[in-house]
Length: 135
Image (cartoon, rainbow, N blue to C red; front, side):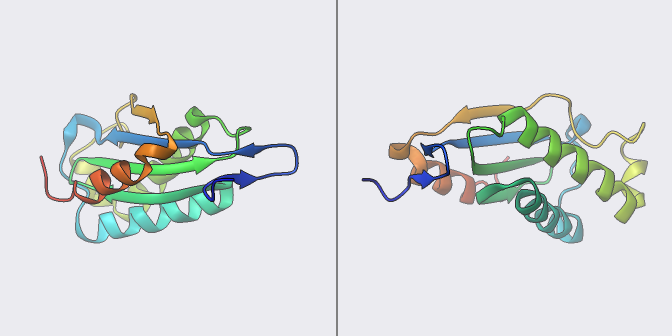
């Protein structure tokens, strides 16, 4: 049996997602301390909401995540938790970013998501890791 399978009480699974979302108006605010704080918060959210972040990278105006989750956790729930919680906390921690964004909306409402099979896991991880600094 493959080693990347996860065993739960009622199922065995390997469910992975590549998720990307952008800052509203593509404002370039995800750098330095903001980026550092965002990554820390995303790891905390993943732990609290019971999914795993395998790879993560921020460009100045968007976020890439490679995550896996139990089948009971929907991909839209993962995105909702990540965007909702980090949006609120980033505005509280860094009030100066509200000068570039208004209506307390940090993230665009849409997102990109794709499922990732076991044969392409390493390719997606490598792609995400290589996104830093690319436009």
